[in-house]
Length: 271
Ligand SMILES: Nc1ncnc2c1ncn2[C@@H]1O[C@H](COP(=O)(O)OP(=O)(O)OP(=O)(O)O)[C@@H](O)[C@H]1O
Ligand SMILES: [Mg+2]
Image 1 (tube, rainbow, N blue to C red):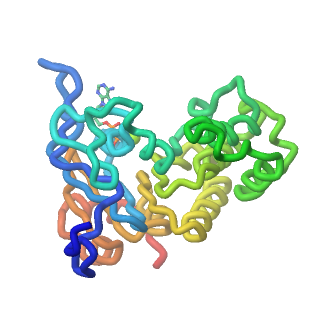
Image 2 (cartoon, rainbow, N blue to C red; image 1 turned 60 degrees about the horizontal axis):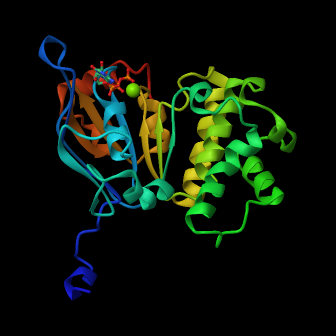
């Protein structure tokens, strides 16, 4: 090991990183540059909120960070190793360390699987990858995972369509957290939920993130929600990052006029 890399002043390797990433969809008159030369580093333990108007490129960016899509140019990395242009079999470390929760749990949960199967599936695939060295998920582990997101044990036998929206989103969170990931990427995980359920799921998420020291990348339209969960905020507009900084800096002294406008549109933030 290079001794310099152990020095306390050595920069921390980001868990996830985008370097000069451009993502172009379509061509000719249909061409859309969803991201334009975006740089973003997610250090271990960071809780980053990504905000910005609809169509600004938030989902495109997190999909690229998670290597669910590949950039048109530039590169993405996980723990300093390139993930863009790498075949799926080279992404096992990323797949087990980074989990995702999306906006609409109805479309992200397999309708043919019971809740019990859905939340233990990631544990089973990890077991396969380790050629059986990891024990099969036990009934106890399943109950523990469900209890962790406030779901009753008997829900394990139900199918997604037999649950409420809030229950489904908690199943999606349970599935993401069951394999004990280092990073959770959540793309508008509560926007489909009604206000009361939303508050419940958000508080749950805030508790889980703190209790596990998770690194979080959280996409939201709602600045108040980002403030509750995150310590850093990234503001996007038209495929670029227009502002980035600690929550206090950006909220108290927005430098970009777009951020100021976004903040002014929030009814009133409780501090
Ligand atoms: N598969 C696709 N094909 C063509 N254009 C796309 C595709 N996905 C996204 N886009 C375009 O890329 C731009 C960025 O989309 P993206 O979904 O990243 O925005 P977003 O910030 O997540 O928006 P929202 O807040 O509405 O979810 C938009 O102009 C969108 O229309
Ligand atoms: Mg989106």
